[in-house]
Amino acid sequence: MWAKRMMWIAWPAFLVAGLLEVLVFGLVDPQDLHWFGHPLALSRQGVYTLAFFAFWALTMVSSGLTTLLSMSPFEVNRCPVPSSERPSDCVRKGDGCC
Image 1 (cartoon, helix red, strand yellow):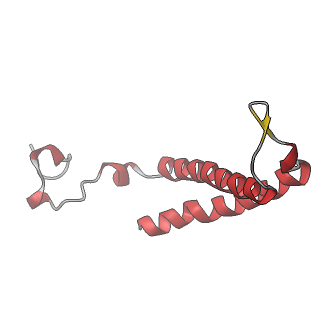
Image 2 (tube, rainbow, N blue to C red):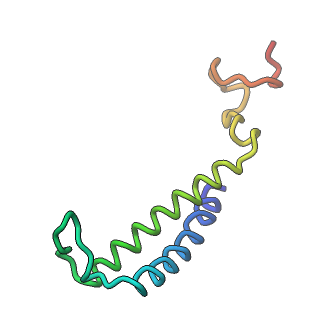
């Protein structure tokens, strides 16, 4: 299930990062960019690459938070260990406890 969720996060983020890359660098020339008043010491392709991965990382964080917030309380609160092997601090209501 986690692999499927990771694809729910990574694939849309990849597509949005590509779209952002096209939109941003359709308007901005990477050779005109400055970092703290100094021109970037990267080629155009280097700037394109770093920007794409930055866009991808930011959109993955956004998609990841959306996926996290969409989890049901059951998914968040369930204990993955069988009840006979659980430590004492992993007891949930309805598990036959008190």
